[in-house]
Length: 103
Ligand code: FES
Image (cartoon, rainbow, N blue to C red; front, side):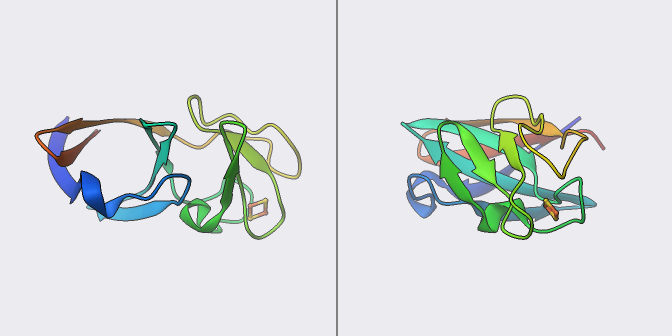
């Protein structure tokens, strides 16, 4: 497990995805109602970038074909995606944003 500072909290905008590339991990971070969520950025259907998707009701909608993914679990809530995307531990500390990824 590796822990990295990936952003300043002030870099994040409510409801707008923030993409982070960390080694082989491409991660989409979201700030929603003051809480942080981190999902694999590659949609499990055809690898569109979920950080470019719209957020609503604790889900992010893939910008390519519209599957919605649960921000907390990474599970798809609508077709065409049928597989989850990974979720990551993300938190803020002293104004910085940290992400934990498996190496
Ligand atoms: S690439 Fe995301 S639903 Fe198709």
